[in-house]
Length: 112
Length: 111
Image 1 (cartoon, each protein chain N blue to C red):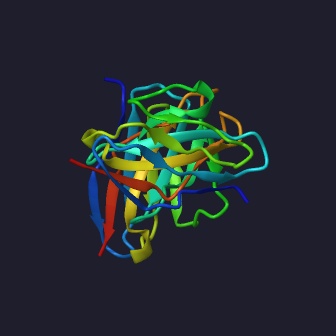
Image 2 (image 1 turned 135 degrees about the horizontal axis):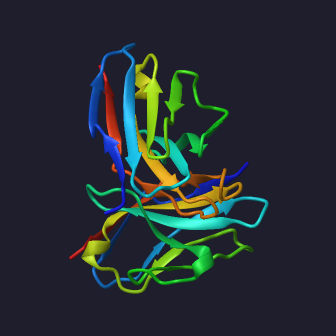
């Protein structure tokens, strides 16, 4: 089945220790998104790629970076995680010209 | 500012009762609105979009521009409808736009 895959599903990192979350897709979609969802809150867009073009949200902290080496993969790098970065991180994809987004299962990040 | 508001965090109904999950939006343009659903231990998925005017799993949602609302309705709730429901507004072009989500409403359907 074509889908959006996120690894790992659960990630524990230490305060200040860099961490990378991974997303891959078999849908061949142009657009890939990263959302942050804190407990009992709505998902909030961090940034997205349209093909290789990176679009950062104005209020996304500099601590968050992203890479998209090819169509299928997109990474979220947190350079120095703080306790406030503990959240569910959702990856989503979308086709150019369409509004629907397809979500992965999420990676739950814990910062100790 | 563009905003989506879901006033109820939790809606609890009995099986067979009608359901209405409220969603109001703030947007000056012509909105593209969606309902997404997340069942327990499953990923977030699209339930329906306003432009298609379709009924999915018995749910419908009508855009009311005068009231800036996009409420989700189902005449007879089923236990399998229990889930978290998010109303979302799409901003920007379909290539470079983004979804703005409401806070979500947990629907609990009791037997």
